[in-house]
Length: 296
Image 1 (cartoon, helix red, strand yellow):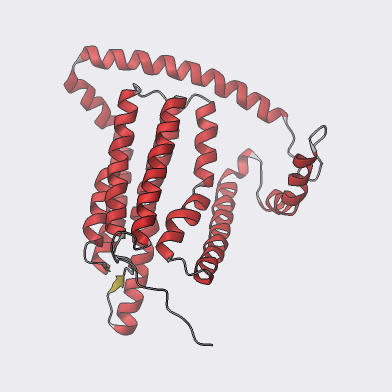
Image 2: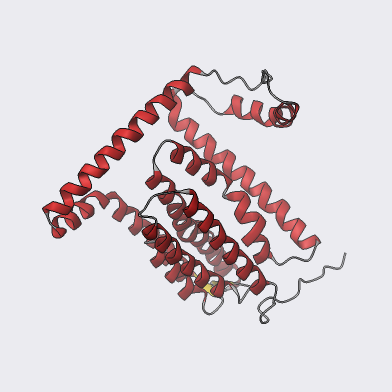
């Protein structure tokens, strides 16, 4: 599904313009993707039934063992976490000077989050909504500040998006994958990353493009969004290549998340980031025009 999403994005970016109906296709594709995931268990059972009873029973046995092991870890972690009282205004005892300095720096934000986000189980929907609002607000501020920094130093927006902005907005995914990995949920760690990228392309790109193209269409009869970088197509193609490389790495590692898999994945990411950045900086050929100057 992720590969199909990337291919769809490549086709849309070929002419460096995103028409309103193309952005609508992205949004509709996300709806179809979620419908498919809703019936994913039925599709999985049908697949195993086609393979034969032996493969189905073997897979169930392995998954049962994994669930039992991960379930015991989750139970232990949840027991230890519920025993701790979250009190952000209390300085950590017995910590190093650096830990106390970090606590002091994060104290204002920790207090704001503590007051605005409920932690009771029956307030779970409100907790979820408040977390989403805070993530959106912080992401907006980060994107705004990073854009100003890039403009000040003459760095193209595409390079800023590939490096600082992409890394900064992916920090929550890193920590969530880290948490579930420690609990033995390796599949959730991988699908968290791939699923979030699918959502980023189909909704986080498709929905703003759709709204913007409709607004400019009604106001100025311009029913498309102009993409200012011709190198994004090459970047997305390299992203598709990195996906296949990741799958090959997982196959070689027998779908076990080890340190070797981690180091290889980091290496592939650095190669992808370097290649994409060099393209956007016009090292190989001209894809980005110089940043416009503003007369004040």
